[in-house]
Amino acid sequence: MALTQRLEFRQSQSLVMTPQLMQAIKLLQLSNLDLTTFVEEELERNPLLERASDEGPAEASAEAGQFADRDESGGQGGDDGFGGSAEGFEPGQEEWMSKDLGTRAEIEQTLDTGLDNVFSEDPAEAAARNAQDAAPTTYTEWGGGASGDEDYNLEAFVAAETTLSDHLAEQLAVAFTAPAQRMIGQYLIDLVDEAGYLPGDLGQAAERLCASQADVEDVLAVLQKFDPPGVCARNLSECLAIQLRELDRYDPAMQALVEHLDLLAKRDIAALRKICGVDDEDIADMIGEIRRLNPKPGMKFGSARLQTMVPDVYVRPGPDGGWHVELNSDTLPRVLVNQTYYSELSKKVGKDGDKSYFTDALQNATWLVRALDQRARTILKVATEIVRQQDGFFTHGVAHLRPLNLKAVADAIQMHESTVSRVTANKYMATNRGTFELKYFFTASIASADGGEAHSAEAVRHHIKQLIDSEEPTAILSDDTIVERLRASGIDIARRTVAKYREAMRIPSSVQRRRDKQSALGNVLSTALSDRSRNTEPA
Image 1 (cartoon, rainbow, N blue to C red):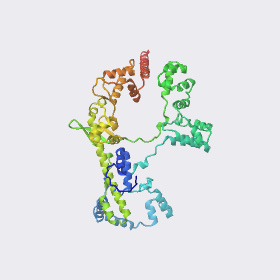
Image 2 (image 1 turned 90 degrees about the horizontal axis):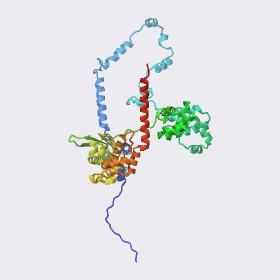
Image 3 (image 1 turned 90 degrees about the vertical axis):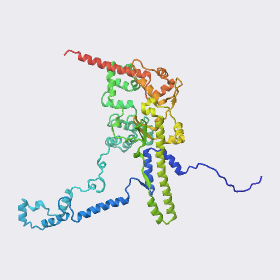
Image 4 (image 1 turned 180 degrees about the horizontal axis):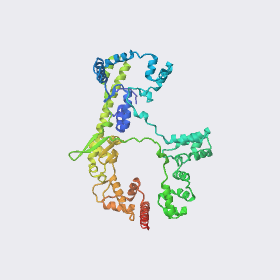
């Protein structure tokens, strides 16, 4: 078989992922905060992009011209606002300055004191004193760090919030004098989380600092005496023990209680009473002391600020009984392409490299404006379809939430499932029933027991929570009983699914709920009996 060379022409279609297309896909899944950051970076990078709300140079110059005309009119002998002309002040001042004040003796007699007490003999000293006594005239002189013609910034006077790390570092500087101990202490302070806890294993800290485990333990023992009490503990039991030692209440019975907090969480009072070796009254007092302690001592100090959740879509009741869906315009960046600036530059730029740079800048700016507009339209389209599919939720509540998946929405608006998935990521909808993430409305379906319409998983979870909240302390519902009641309501669900939903909602088991409610009921009865006995005491 002979090998030959030849030319062939073929025509085919293929989808090419250009950088701009990839960036447009990325814009869909960005939250409003990430999108704002991205647009700010583009505004700094691209000279042809500008904010739609920015004031143009022509408007600024026109405004400056109005102020200039106003100043000129005031300087031409107009009214100065105080009932006289601006020119009439200087002659009066010159007339006062030219008036003869008399001899030195006459001046001292008029002032009733010597001139040496009023005017300093040393001109340099007088100038220094006047400069020191003079009040600051600009914002910069007060230490604000801004020029006098800028806006007044109140944030410059706000004190910085003290963090837990700073508070511990101040005590560290006083507690230790040896540099090695300070280094170990600062390393441990850097490991403390917002709640005030250290990691359970500090062996890695000793290895990194090339120090012995005993040295680290010695420094840790001092750190655990710092304020607030309970800080630098490695677990909850150690945190409570530190606070009890501070209160001088860490006796053997309390130590046994702190070491068996798992039984306290399960409300197994009988086992705790046996382990601690005390009676019912003492164990109740000990549990009351534990409850008065602070399990997270570091939370009272400054921590990282939480960003407020801003909805991307608003849903409001319409006048026709339907629902009106609109975008939150505050979360949409407003950028424009400055075509005028590009036209002026294209006439003046002569180098080919500069021309290609501005051509690419124009293409990128135009693409970004179109991509932002397409992103807003896509979010509105997806949100509108979600509201149409879940109208029962907005009208009647979570019990009427329907099963919904990405494919149903994608087929309705003729888009791909991946596009719907990106649009619903990190987006929030403000409704009459609260603010929800768009992904909240996509729930799995659970079959109906009677063969009817399927139920939403979120609606089933809501039903389970209602059943548990309404149970009596003497009749706690087990998972099997909940399954039977759900099937009686037309919901076909397995017991393991009920247990999974219950654990996801952080609802304890039936055994733990029985202990909690009986303990709460016992506390109420004991309080009522004590009040009754107090009222029946003879006066």
